[in-house]
Amino acid sequence: GAVVSQHPSWVICKSGTSVKIECRSLDFQATTMFWYRQFPKQSLMLMATSNEGSKATYEQGVEKDKFLINHASLTLSTLTVTSAHPEDSSFYICSAIGAVTGNSPLHFGNGTRLTVT
Amino acid sequence: AQSVTQPDIHITVSEGASLELRCNYSYGATPYLFWYVQSPGQGLQLLLKYFSGDTLVQGIKGFEAEFKRSQSSFNLRKPSVHWSDAAEYFCAVGARTGTASKLTFGTGTRLQVTL
Image (cartoon, rainbow over the protein chains, first blue to last red):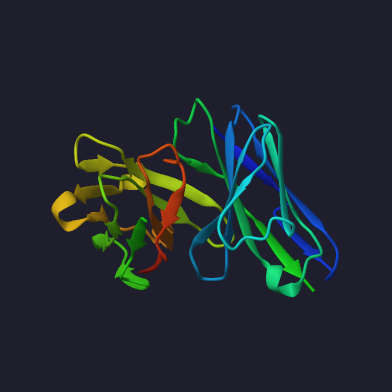
């Protein structure tokens, strides 16, 4: 139980276009979802926290207008990278918590590798 | 602010040998502590967690970790490593506040297993 799914697993896009990444909780209601970014061979950096039905809370240094987060339902959060540039190429991972997981992100998606050409 | 240090960037062990991955944290009180494993190109899988109680925590895949308050450490151990354990291991700390779910990750330790 408590499965988190991300889609797509990888995406290649041209510079200047926008890309949407989905994070779904498959068998539980996710009150909160977290979006992380991971550069090659580096650790995960929290980008933002999204609560269902409210605006996301972004970490310091993360551009809100560049990384649009929507958490419109208890099972889906989306991250849209707008006007993507090569420096946005990275591995993006989400995690989700809900009543079934307690107050800690025990489950992560398998990540989305974004390559901007 | 909380922080996590994983001193070893890369560790190589022989299959069947014991393993210890180090993790030190900085936090004003007792935090929530986690170990995750990541295979190449994959997400993170939780190995084990410490919230309170017994300081020796058992996890999946034969892993265990011991919380030592005096040393601010949460080292991960496994008595006998299998080749399939080769992966990246991350230690993480979560604050015991309303934002307890926000994790700070260490930089990771890459484990290589030789046959």
